[in-house]
Amino acid sequence: MSDQYIKILGDDISLSSDYKDIFELKFLPDNPRVYACTHGEPDFDNRTEEEQQNIIFEKLQQEPSVKRLLPEVKRHGGLMEWILVRHDTMEVIEGNSRLAVYRLLHEKGEPGDWDLIPCYIISTLTAEQQAAYLNQIHVKGKTQWSAYEKANFSYVRYKRGWKYDRIAKLFGESVTTIRIRIKVIEMMKENGDNEQSHFSYYDVMVRGGGISKEMEREGLKPLLFTQIKQLGSEEQDNVFTAQDMRRKLPEIIKKPKALKKFINGEVDLDEGYQIAKTSDVSKKVKQAHSILEGIEKQNIESLEIGELNALKHAVRKLKQGVKRVSGLVDLDGSL
Picture 1 (cartoon, rainbow, N blue to C red):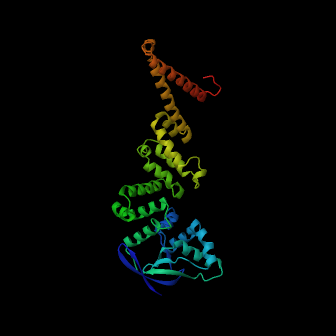
Picture 2 (picture 1 turned 180 degrees about the vertical axis):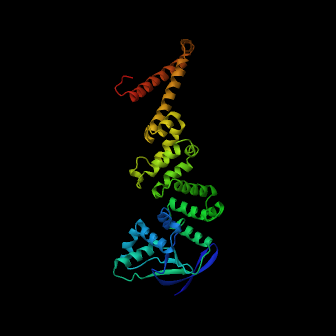
């Protein structure tokens, strides 16, 4: 056992290295990666500690990080990066996936010593120090959290009474960014949606200026809630992506007729967008027609030779434009 130090928020935190029984250690429930797996579990917070730990282990087994890590740990016969444990709580601050892998290998009876896991051990940490450490490792470090995990990290601390500016200081980001992240998680919870891949859709609803202002419009929010919750976990396979929603929905909102059809379920997102954009095209054509109607014969006769030649050139271009648009409107040429 050797003494070492790490620096957190300007303080030297002593730690030692040792091997711990894998069943003596506990998963950290509010580690963002762990929390992302369990926060949708019914009544999770009211379960016993043993029940929570069993649920976490069950959920972690399905995580891609654990599935990727397991064959590597098995191949090397152990960890290349040790886990970090708080001695006062026996919780794994960093390395919950690695602990899950050790327990899986132990359950499978794989050859090797999987009963004991190598650890760096810290006697204790304040809530601020623990959050700062996790932030450094997963936000600024090599194993970065997803936007969803960062949002959950902020949300959990906000629910524990942390102020926005305190969380913002931890991330080194603006209070506005933290407010938005928390609002997105709150919106997901309002809709009872725990699917991580849906986070980007709710983010559009909160951030999109042309969208967020219209969320309370009668029928729009319930419709979007229903549509998003029905989407699958693979965004590219869904009927629309978050990027589609960011680009098309503001255009629909600008056009009352298109929006009404969309809310009533008469058209989907893409169809509503096409209706909205077609309205723009019609408006432009009508404006062009109105301008041309204002040109009389005396306006032409008063032009000097140079101006007349310029007008003839402009008219030729106009004819070409009309022909092109006519072809787009009616491909058989009979406008």
